[in-house]
Amino acid sequence: TEYPSVLYLNRIVPYKNVDDLIKAFKVVVNAVPNSKLLIVGCRGTKYEEYLRRFVHKLNLSNSVEFYLFATGEKKRDFLQKAWVHVLPSNKEGWGISVTEAAACGTPTVAYDVIGLRDSVKHNVTGFLVPYKDINALAEKIIELLSNEELRREMSMKAREEALKYTWSRTATLISNAIERAINNFKIKVLSYHLHQK
Image (cartoon, rainbow, N blue to C red; front, side, top):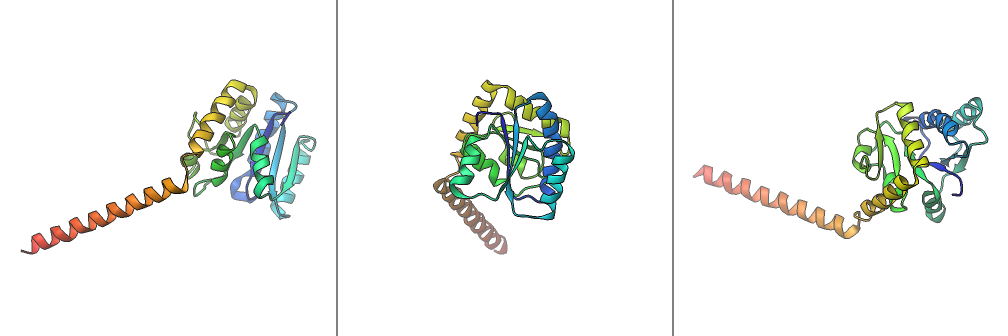
């Protein structure tokens, strides 16, 4: 985007702590006045209503935009145009939106929690900050928005990392794991038979 943009693109549910991101963005917009927060994934829930009221209460209505749930090209468009992607969840299985953002060359700032500490490579493809540390969240978003050289470097590394996740590589890893399991089983069976004699 022509303006510094912060993107949240995910399901909008309480455990993903979108309200933490809004609190952090209040700090961000004071440091980077022309920045915008794009919240993508709206489906008309009570939590979204709360978030909209919270944005209004913090006087951020001109800087925060809400969008419906996006898929396909529209989703990719959001991910490619954003300067930084943020996922402040309290847990993730992996955090697929982190990898999707990385594939589009967009680094992620996330909480250092299970799942996200696997999908975000700290100081390489983005930043991990302590859980519920709103100031640290804001600080790392500001750092990426303000430092073009750092943002470009992380963008490149994020894309390189995302490109490692291919179906052929996944198939090879699964095949190798199965082969190791079979070999381990054969060794145990052989060991059992040797001890029986």
